[in-house]
Length: 329
Image (cartoon, rainbow, N blue to C red; front, side, top):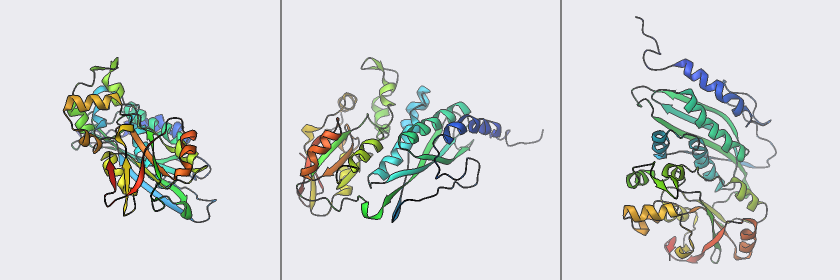
């Protein structure tokens, strides 16, 4: 018998099926700036209407949250997670997402699963007015077991050079405002899975995996709503490392983000994880978002306006002088 690519474990026909299942939905994310369609060697995106544009890029994956999705065969949120982890990062600099590319690797391709993941990305792209302009699906037998998938993405956005947000405008007396998360988002799942090995146990009246797989919140809409009305001195996306590691990334030398932990609205699932796993509160703050998916830093004068513009935002701290860039009090 002659060897073929299929006999080696790579089914090209399943790849073609995947493209057929996603191409119409992907095309719906395109706008006039996208100059070609799926299938070209490269994707073209025309930039116009900016005086001094700066491109802002970010790349990320979903981590071991994928194991929860794979073990429960619930794939619908994973594409949203992948996009959100990338797009939320570049939002921290005031950038508007322009386009997104994905990378999906697996041991044995199932076009239905691959399409479900990509269609989640499409949904997220539409929310962010971002074009999904390309990607790669890699079937790699021997590298991954059948049923295993890995997902990563790459997002490019744009901002005027004189409108870049990098924390340099933060000053003493500024206020720190929390934008709630939707849950764990896509971080800390190696610890989550260790403490919660049974994804089908009942929590809050439903299977635990439904809570664990709530997709990462997309912050494009609320952040750009604020950008139209107030000056944001700093924005931090609270991902792996929690508040402890992410907030200091935007704090200038000599200043400190003094955060009142008593104000933070910690989700029940995180309190249960802390209790059941015998995890210290400081370890929790250094691993998970603790219910705060993004923080914005604004002047005291703009604080009330921000709180009035976003119904779920709330005050958690202020900028003080200190050699340490963050203090949880």
